[in-house]
Image (cartoon, rainbow, N blue to C red; front, side, top):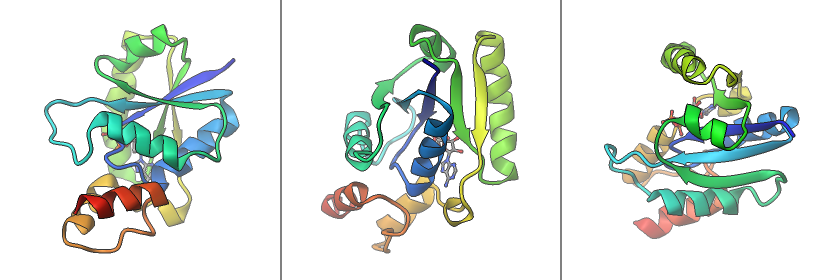
Length: 157
Ligand code: ADP
């Protein structure tokens, strides 16, 4: 079984994340979406709620699990017998952010590869930050997030 982790904040999960997850499942037998508990950020949704919303958004997919996680992803990957981290690249700035992380993770866990996927053009400009900002001012984010996320955002107002 070739297992990968898909780590991220997912605050909230978007069609961009879904795009990367679906591509990852074409290459790996199993993917664990690993929702970061980052105590220094003030999240829109609590990590457990983010997990529930992701699960509700991926009912059509098989071989995916969703868990929260705090600590070093390189260690977590070892514990979970994962051989890769999935990450998405939208633009050059993503590469600049991702490269040192991938390099550090390779040092911490030489058996772990970071694998990058490009989203379809339609999803390439979506970010959780933009979704949060649009939502904050009452804008329509229905083309950015799956239905369960949209519902949760609406009921949060
Ligand atoms: P993090 O805080 O770890 O960057 P995010 O939830 O923002 O967490 O992103 C998780 C991963 O998903 C990152 O690799 C990011 O580049 C990727 N990603 C986010 N949005 C998109 C998108 N629209 N298209 C492709 N990849 C994306």
